[in-house]
Length: 416
Image 1: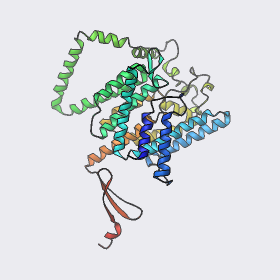
Image 2: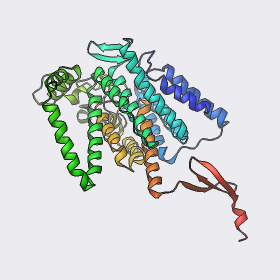
Image 3: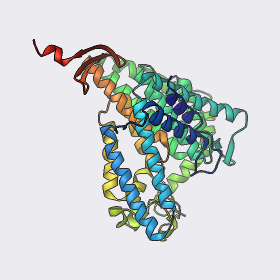
Image 4: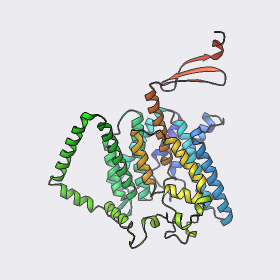
């Protein structure tokens, strides 16, 4: 395996270990930087690296981010705006190089192995009692925040799930079970919502697939009714319901639901996440407020950053950059299929209440969604043969895993 791939895998394997405060470099980032420099200066020997056409809107988005934040950094004399820009540049580089590395199917299989390992290793750390707690009821393992851990477990599960699909396999139920257990320990309501949506949409797609075959309708109805009867009349069902109802994560869900009421005491969900700035400062959604100095928005209940992926981008950078970001997302997910619909919907719902754009796996997941979609298209067309010409007029016919089968010069055909 190429060294740049090994370094990138080490970057993923060490990502859960937060040795320093959030917001700065961690050990894992050094491995990505090493992978980046090795590929650029050793493998490519300093040659120009082309940005995939899919990622050009993302490149323009990052350019806008730098422009907006530079204006505010100059006006306020505050470096926090520049640091925010660097996050986006860093993740743009991750997208570019992960897309290049993802052309190797063996590399993607190794990524799945690392994601599965990360899920199991966090379980091991929890079982031996080495993980940290944010509060008495909110576990955060090796992370600095329970939401960080919850999101990492969720996104690792989604990544392993998609790569299993690429290899025409199903992710073992063990990893699903472990992920659910760990997310319950974090008491992250956003991640619980993400998993609920994922499994709900996944189940609906399975039912839809089966219902297309008329003879399966009775089969589904029979086993669904039988399963419900066994659950409802089981002597352990009441104990199970009481245990779940008393868990910290369900208590937090009830608190979130209570905040949706008009007459609620304390901040509403929108206010708590800082999303109220969208309607308190609507003019900022045109050209952006810049990402920094969050306490300057005195009308907002919260003085923290906006905890919502899309709404934060809209508020901090304005309409044009937001449209570029959404266009990049659409380019990666526009070829929807039942196999990736559950991932897309759950990520979209989860991103409403959590700030994900600083997490590399968030951006990498969109690359995987496009890779999976292209594979489905190729399989439907029933062909894995690609024909192209290089600058020297060499006709290349490739089949399968990018292996060159024949190379012929076009000049050889001109006399025929």
